[in-house]
Image (spheres, rainbow, N blue to C red):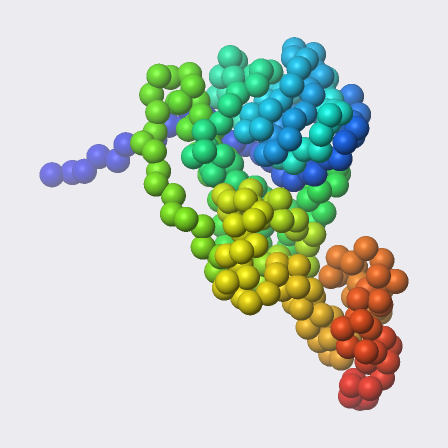
Length: 285
């Protein structure tokens, strides 16, 4: 008896990703009126945005998304309050026409699916993730399968909300476990060089700032900020002693705002400037 292999079809397929951004817009911040040759997902994690686009003008509230079609003129305005916002530019096949250019409320489960895509986006693309750039560079040292996982997580997200809202057929609800602070520790061990805010961590791990900070301190005995600072300090010490990189290069590698801020940071914690530390501890070859 011969088994028959059945080919599986793709009804919705992500074909490319331009960017994965996490922004914290301040009051009265406005993006330029612009358009792109790809779809753009805009999701509000907290606060409220005003969307001004060819096909929609109005508010975008917490946990709502809007998908702009390719080459649709649009801009965003946070006039009444600050807002945390996810923006993902992508190309795809199979996007339903009635899914475009109007706000759509996400369920908690689908917010978690989007958070997984944002997390994978950080593995695929180099920082900065919070600054508008037209050409996000890929990480040279990606985890195994990172690009495929980004593609799959976005497809899972879109298929879930298409089923829920447009096909009268929903996925079985996934039961998500309470977030594990140890996962955040592992995440920061990998991402400490990048600029990561508490709002972004809370979104990615499906919790709020208060709970995240409390659970993180229970596990590590310290705050998120201090944990990241300690990781950066130890890395800076290694680079100062074990390499001949300039202090500006080290500052940039560790994503400090400036060499002056790096120097103050380092001296406050070691009692020595980077130059004094190198002179004292580096073994001359």
